Image (cartoon, rainbow, N blue to C red; front, side, top):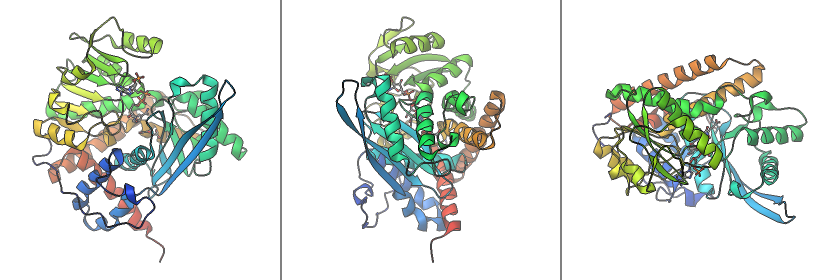
Length: 441
Ligand SMILES: NC(=O)C1=CN([C@@H]2O[C@H](COP(=O)(O)OP(=O)(O)OC[C@H]3O[C@@H](n4cnc5c(N)ncnc54)[C@H](OP(=O)(O)O)[C@@H]3O)[C@@H](O)[C@H]2O)C=CC1
Ligand SMILES: O=C(O)CCC(=O)C(=O)O
């Protein structure tokens, strides 16, 4: 366990703000943005003289809400609400994914954009933080409707994105195909092929080898580093994964290849378990065919709520925010919780896990592999010179391991959790950049 004491720093009073977004500046604000504000309050005492800039982290630099109207296949017009939020650009252009999900809200996208600022600084890639999303259940749209939605959204946010301004990428329910449509639409609107406007594209239109697996690979790399620190062998370790999409599926596959047993998996369709280890490639085939883990023959169905009590060493939430709560954290038997998803653990659950001695490796370092290879993709697009997958994976491993080592060291130095340590490293970098740049006289 890194921290000997809990970092339950009392929330510092937030000055009464005269700001259009004032309702979002209250740390008691519910949901992911409120959680992010509490995380900033916890790190503030460790920022020294840079703390004078901390308010800059408590509001997004830009938040764009767009109406996205499309014609459905049946001829009716449907309107969807979309967002692109640029939280901070002190260290470089905005960078972060685009989510298509029925529960997307401005507050959620603000938090996701802020976590991108922290994540990008934690691995020291030269970006600020941004995120986008559309409130839509993409499963209810045809392929043509989804394409129209993506293209109209891209045109609407086209006024603030661009290869040197803000670079979207995949997130929940978006993929290479969606990125290809975004790149094409933006390119049509500016009159030239602008491959650098998005990352996570298909390799044939300027994408990078290794990007599809990068987030899951990074989760695996970080888990190996953390396991080493607590004396846990990956070979034979028991792993439970929530969410079996891009991140959870890839991480699960890499764990299985390294000799770990993936003993439980949960997604939106249900939960399955196999004490001897699930056959992960077969499970991936099943999910590709049926859309979820339910009905997989190689494991027994368990109640989704029982997933959290799985007998395991490593638990990987890799679905959505707010999954590990005060109601299920007490059941978790794992020695380490590696956050593949963004914001999966509520602050109350974080404290419960801390008190139980579970090592929590936070999202802002654990899932940073995706944006790290996005950075490689962006660099390759600018230079039109493409690297081998082996080179990409080696560079990814180096960045992730070095970032984790620095965070571990900071956690030891200040006797804080890995989450607060990651925020100390990242916020110091962001606010140092802000300080160097200064304000208008
Ligand atoms: N893609 C990337 O590069 C990155 C993603 N992330 C984060 O990782 C997480 C997963 O993203 P990604 O793998 O890309 O997304 P995908 O859309 O590929 O997969 C999401 C997975 O989560 C499952 N899921 C959704 N809702 C629930 C729920 N309520 N309970 C259980 N399972 C659920 C989905 O199951 P079902 O299909 O049944 O709904 C699916 O298996 C997100 O938090 C994302 O922000 C972080 C860094 C980068
Ligand atoms: O690859 C990227 O730019 C960002 C991926 C992302 O959205 C995330 O890390 O949460």
